[in-house]
Length: 490
Image 1: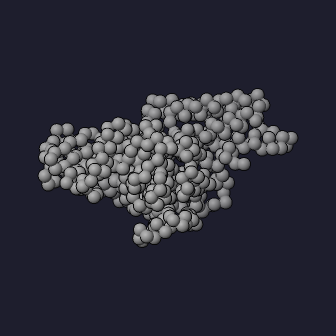
Image 2: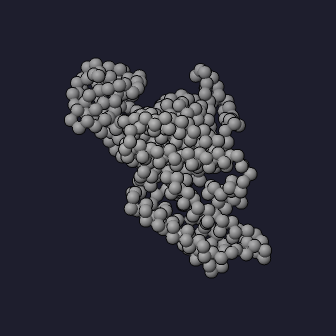
Image 3: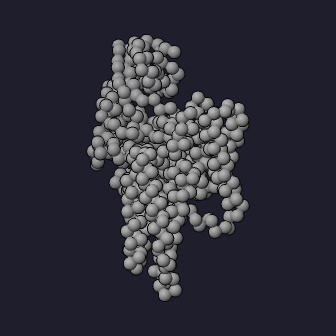
């Protein structure tokens, strides 16, 4: 496929990915290398004002400067008499808007994953004093990797360098995601991006923007009157999640959460992101906790167990391999149980003296072994990825979209289970298995069929466990999840 008047011959153009006021984006392939990319074709004749030209120049300058795993990478830019071409990496997962529409709303755990990735990108941008001013789901692109999606910020057409506290008056952004101070033509600063993040976060959780309106007039009236933003009662979210959302969606920018507090918020919790270093740190903390425990220094031991679990629990929850995750969860539960015993003793010392701590040595040894395995098999950037077996299966199935789609649903089911949304998890597991089992029957004998069979068996087992759990809700197993560790309880 060719586009009209395109004078760049090193690329073969394919389908149109999107279009705006003065630009159209295509998927393309570099002829020599076969590398897939996205090309934004900007018609110079439609750049009717200086501001539009300035936006293009700014976008190119910023994309040349900003290099981050959660920001779309610019490969090159070219131009001729009629068009300007911005060549970027191709994000094969579409955009966040389409992702939300397909699923209607997202579980809190997935929202947290995307929000963390967005926060990491914003943290990097703020370190370069860059504001985006057009954050919306359509500009958050997704790269599809085995069993997960990586979010990347794109379209820096409205972005600019703006120091903290420096103000602007030019209207920028998309109305539904635009901060009130911009929408009402007041002065604004970089914190306008935080409102946009809040709207995106709300839409991820509930499937719609907080001020969804039929007309611009209706939207403006809601903003002018500072209409209270209601949270749907049918969707349960954690206290930390709700607190952050309310802090982001403050109409008054002076009352809105700051970037520093946003990055440090307990829901985002960038400090405890799963990584090889944090696994090692968790083991070191647990070792100190056991040492203090043996010495009878229970207050110190309790604080250390709590601190260690803050590093260890996210690693457990992000582990996609079910067998490995169960082993890690058992280790975490041992620390949880010990912390609860100590907490009970500290509240009522005479009656609740803790038992011997010796058995925790095995958990520490197991955790250390797990850390060594991480070091052998992964790098710091890959700790969050699914297990090697799942990745291999997924890569081998790329030629079969139906299998990949079902594998993605199964991965989503695991994430639902992580956040204890067991009913939805079971539905998703059943949906994944309903797609995979018939496909397995058509699969020819070979390594791919064996791996697919193994994955199906694993998810069948998980689905049966969840089904049993739901049938016995009053079972003591409801207290075993690591998300309920004693450090969080007051």
